[in-house]
Image (cartoon, rainbow, N blue to C red; front, side, top):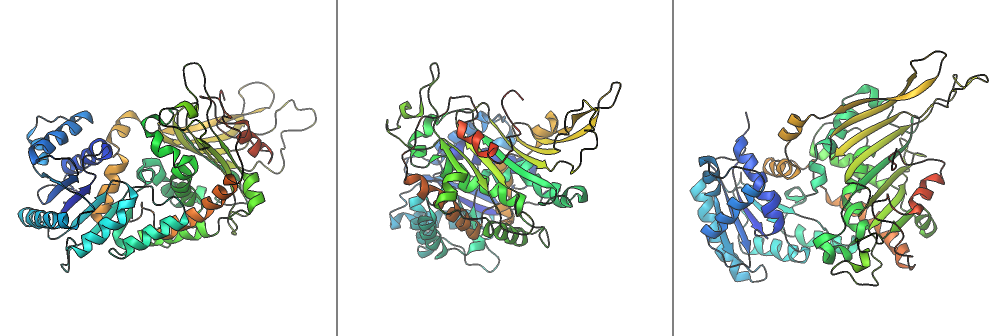
Length: 495
């Protein structure tokens, strides 16, 4: 049976697209399952002039848009827990009104002082909000009450800005009260990495540089920048995808086994892994990372002619790179990463390529057999979830020859339907106070230090953009990057 959690939620940016599309439907799922029931309330804030009724009507629409029935008593009871307060985050006086409302709702719903503050707005306001929450008395001070701060990316745009932001938050909240949300860490198969590794002797015993040749992480997006152009042009693929999503996935793949399955132990091992990640000098950064920007095809405009993008933009829409860990487990085994927009399809996958046998006994002189292929363990993250293991087996014909076969497991349609959405999982973790699937400050800082060096090198050079065709898998340089090591991408077009 689910455990009912108690809390008053305060959403800054409560009328934003993320809140309506993801956050409120996720809370409704928790409500339907019994994780929330009678002892919670939600306050939405923004500059918009709304009242409770108009806000609740918007909540009802957001639930309907996400496929929920809204004509039931359950839906109406859930929506009745929502309240609205227009708010200027820079006006200290406005926090007194919020405090009065929070205290009133805490008493009405018997939430026992538990408070969750969700910041879904521009990061430049994070420090101001955190400071005023404390100085204006919105933080609960009861012995058993909790205060938790949830923040969306981007967490800075480099190490220095991230540190300033973290220092500002730390004046009001302890590290264990800060939940830096990364929705990739809420995905089913990303969380399955730990189960796959540490729950299977067969896998973990081979999970090292003696048996693994390389690991590949691909986050491919089929669409372009769409309505995010203004934000994206100030960010680019390196900051938007590599520094957070990819570095978090890589840390789960590279970490050592934790002492126990707790958030503190798991975070400690992820930090150790990121500490051992080699930060490149200028020459190595230029060699081991490539960038791209998509061109035009048919009626698809190139990136520089998308709405709200400068015609001389040098922002990258594609990144591929080679990561090296200087530790006992991974020394000599590269991690290849790539991500980009306007690629062949939308998917996320991890390919673990094992070393071939030292001796291929089937390749005797008179044999017409092709060389043995490498064993590959693939973790499919999206759009389909599951695993695939490529092995070598004998063909079903006369003579003796081998061929690669695949052992596949894909989550069926019913299980996929029943699988919680990432934001539902993560909001549930916030309610529990479980930081396992959130980025700690040390993780964020090491990721920025690595990415900043790549950015510095790129800023010294004028890129030759555009350099890849939409619906391909990126520029030719991404192929050359891995071919230089006598390897190839496991996922290739038409393979």
